[in-house]
Length: 352
Image (tube, rainbow, N blue to C red; front, side):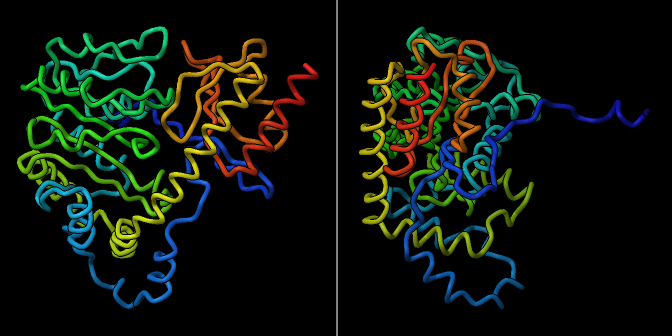
């Protein structure tokens, strides 16, 4: 058909399966296994639905103010959006507009190349080393921008802030985005560096450590000029991206710091137990500091394990891609869920 020549075609991002059957152990999408703060339920129960006839605050001031106070930054240094995917997409549109290629790892969040293709941004992937670590020297060459997750996904590998500071300092002509979706599970944020480097943008999400994937809340923190440019693009694209309930419950989640720390602590404890058990069963993996483990078995192919687990209503993530086809990404669930996972793997490996 003649109109098809004008269609923008891209290879879309593929999310993990969302099984609806009862009794499924869902360890494939890095969701939090615990409910969000109980304060959120109170707010939803008292919410005046009549307000939904009105547009929300386009600046989401209540949420922005709470985040600014929590992270000890100015309100003008905070940008919010509909999940970190929305925030990152806005950042790609805003900051990656040059002719030089942007840089990101070859094994990483698979949305980066999708956005680059959608927005017609030239890019180059930089291969991780044999231990799935980022090679710093790859990011010290001329570029049009840099985006790196820390901890990386799906590997779970964490780099320290000094590692990133050298990359940021060496690229004053490029915006460096550090995607910290999983940083709360054992990492140190690069947010303290934003006052030293005006080219640093730090992106985080409520989907993992704050147990709010369904609410779609993400944010970025950077210097005031970066945030102002982001808002210019956002308000030219869609002024009212965040809905009223999300703004209110997002603020409540930030204020309930005790609950946030409690569930993060539980997940870390369960992760460390799971790593020991997987090691005992013959799995190898990098020392994950995220809410998942990226593991391969010494004898049984990952695809065989993936299919066997799925047949028994245990869902994990597998990619049939170069370098990682023999790995499974296993989200950390509750203690009970992980015990069932380990029990199944032990039985399966003994029989195969």
